[in-house]
Length: 93
Image (cartoon, rainbow, N blue to C red):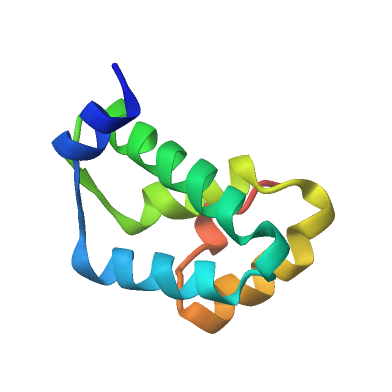
């Protein structure tokens, strides 16, 4: 399935999409575009894997945790907090 097909098939929960966009805006410019691409794609895959056609907040949070390199973990946690994502139950241990 191509990325275009994937994007056309899935909708994003409004509040979750607003938080995602705000989070992306807060990521340093040099990393912003790649973060947006990989997390967006993974969030949609996460939604599909749970059988949903709607991307929800947990899909996005899990995507950030799985796709953002560990070197940026503390920045990511700070930004997740600032944006208001409920991430603690999805945080890897």
